[in-house]
Length: 64
Image (cartoon, rainbow, N blue to C red; front, side, top):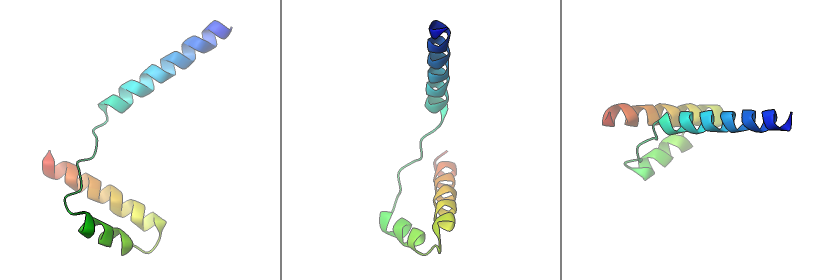
């Protein structure tokens, strides 16, 4: 039983590593001051997260 649990954990770990390896990383931020100002203008945490995700998608599409 413990061997089965060990094998399952290793399989999940391997799948997680493959998925993480296939996920593209975000390109670097061009102007950090402009980015910080944009984040600080957002009203709450939900809006900040949305801004950061949209900015990362924009940078990915610009470079790709």
